[in-house]
Image (cartoon, rainbow, N blue to C red):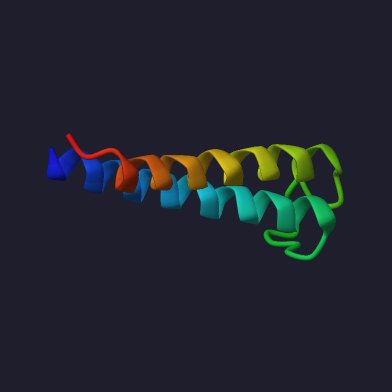
Length: 67
């Protein structure tokens, strides 16, 4: 079970980081790569926030619930 918790924690962290990148691209703060269709597109702020919250919840659950 430790392995599953570790994998879930890493997965949650990656989902959270991807969400932060989406927020950065949606706001135009992180305009890389330059050819990205996500730059300055407000829907990606919402999707990034949602992904970040889900990532944080996965990390929290992987640390909280011990089987």
